[in-house]
Every structure is written in structure tokens, then in C-alpha cells.
Length: 452
Image 1 (cartoon, rainbow, N blue to C red):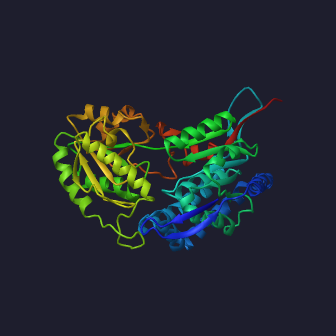
Image 2 (cartoon, rainbow, N blue to C red; image 1 turned 135 degrees about the vertical axis):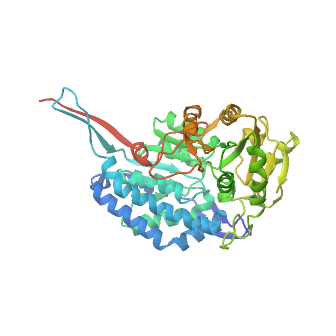
Image 3 (cartoon, one colour; image 1 turned 90 degrees about the horizontal axis):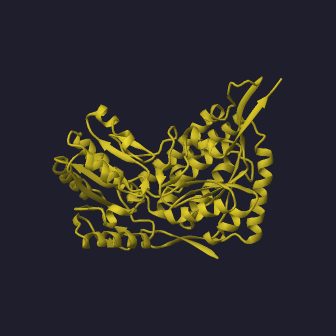
């Protein structure tokens, strides 16, 4: 089988990649197993030096890697550059902190000595999506490799060029051959890979459907799993908010990466008078976003990664309109491109409220008061994050426990940061990436008890 990489902006074929044969997959797995036996013995300090090298390779080749990303999945080039630099940051973060995170945790008991050690577990399979094709790999790979594990990447087939670059980055940085490898396989081969004894754990960032499938397989074969799935984040604006700040942040929170982000603000819940203060400048801001070729430095929004994704988004939009929602701006689709759209009158029961809309559609919801705003925010099967905009920080703090999501951001968009744990609840998945929690997902927390 062959995989074609297609530029979503002009539908031109970029490259073709041949699927790994059964023997090639066997050899890749075996190479990973062998590499682990020596990599696990490399001191953490030495592993971290190689992470610093990887960060340097990324920074020295920003244009090359960013261009591949923009061509393969349509990300505006300015955002693509930022993504590459963020990958370098996560390499630096774990290079600076992995030794501390992995240090023995001393626990006082009646023993002469007792502690928890953090040992690597082996080969971890990562199944990654196309929307942040470098970042979502590096936020897995940096802590996983620093912990002494080896990694296998089954990337989305439309970004195999990015996957190729990532494997090259680790080799150029000096990581031993076999520590990080690509698997170019169709998803129907996933069960066979997960069932292999060499695979000790699996992590997936992707859709709810993919998460259910991989979670089921991980359970079936008793493999540790981390699932980072979809989101339907609420962006709550109270009447006392700094509206200029809220509008500016809200446009970025919804339209960045052409709206193709699990943590994008998707449901804008405007309380009382905030509705009339927020909506007009928000609409004007959305209108002003420059659309075009993602390779152009001035482009603010490009196509979605594939035409079928734009088709799905447009169908959700039209179904919501039929149920009473109103298009204030945008609403048109042309191939893989979907206009930035503002939809008002959105209520529970509409796809724009209930479902994850993976594209540049902002659903506007009116709430009569703060209590109704939080009830609406919590009315979701997803649980990645909530943003709250208000000038009363102390009042905002009182609402933290009302949010069942994995993150609560006050006066800021929900974002991932190497220093902070990242993950969701409900249909947004389980487990945590990044920070101390992320490196501990794929280690054996071993209790050691020494009696005199």
C-alpha cells in the first residue's frame, strides 16, 4: 500500500510513502527492543544532553520543518515556525528537569531505607494526529526518551514527511539508532502492533473514536495507555471582563491552526451585557483574518487539512442552522477551505454546541448569569479546558471547583505548556502529558524497602 501526501491548498501531490512490510515492521520492533537494553543504561544526564542537541537541530532547521508542515496539512507558516520552536522548548525543559523528576522519592517508614524508583518500561507506541504534527510527537517523545524508554511513532498518513523529519532529528542529535523510529502502516495493523510483547505502553492523541479503539486494545492486551482526545472548550466572558483582551484572545483561541485544535475555544458563553460588548468586535476581528496560501507569511488562516474534514464541519454548521442558529459571518466552503464563521443563537441540542467542531466555527451562546454560564460550560461530554474572562480574580478562583475539565484558565486561552500537566476528563481522555506527571506516565514506580 502507498500513502500519498496531498497539499490541501492546491490538491497537488507532494510525496508518496510506501507502507512498511510485515518483515520491516518485525525488524523495527526488534530494533527497538535491542536499543532499549542499552539505552536504559545510559545515565539520565547523557540522555538529557542529547535532548539539548535535538532542540538545537530543531532551531537550526525551523524553515525546513515548518514548510513541510504547511505543505502537508495547511498550517499557516508563521504558526508552523512557532510550533517547531515550541518543540525545541519541550526538549530543553526535560533536559533541564528530567534528572530531578526521575530521582528516587524517599519515603520515611520503619525500614532502614525506603523509596520509590522510576525505571523505564521499554518500547512505547505513539499514535499521533496531523493537526500539530511535530508538537504532539515531541511532547510525548521528550519525556519518554529522557526516562530511558524507546519510542515508535505511527503518525497520521498525511504528514509522513513530518514524521520522516522527526526521526532524522533524533538521529542527527545523536540518539542511538533504534531509540526512535517511524512505523508507516495503515491503522488496521494497529492491533497487531499493540499485541506484540515488545510494546509496553501506548499513547494516542486523536479522535474519540480512535481513543475508544486504542483504549479497548490496550485493555485487551494489558498495556498502559494515555489518551488525549477531542474537546469542546467553553470560553466564558463575564460582564466585568476586559473586552478588548477577551476579543483578541478569543479570536486566537478559536481560529489558530484554522480551528483544528482539541483545546480551541469552541463555545463562547457570553454573560448578560457581555454579549453586546463582545460580539460586534469579535465579528469584525474574524472578518479581518487574511485567508490564503499557508506558505505566505501574511496568511492568517489556510485550508483544513483535508476536504473531507471541511465537508464534515460544514455539515455540522448547516445542521445547526436548521435547528435555529444564525450565521453572522462566513459559512461558505470551497474544497478544503472553510471560511471563518461566527454562529449565534447556539443552544444545547445543536451540533455546534454538543459536538466538537474541528475548524474555524465559533459558536456564540448567551447566558443570563454566571450560574447559567457554568451550567452551559459543564453541559458537555468532553472535559479538556475552560477559559474564564473577568476582572475579579478572587471571584474567578471560587469557580475553579465548578469546572470538571482538566484545565481552568483565567483571562487566557487554554494552551499546553511543558511546565504544566496537560490532559482531560470524560470523552477528552485520560492520563497526563508534560510536566512531572508526563514523564511519570511511562515509568515503573518501583517500591524499594530495605531492612537492616
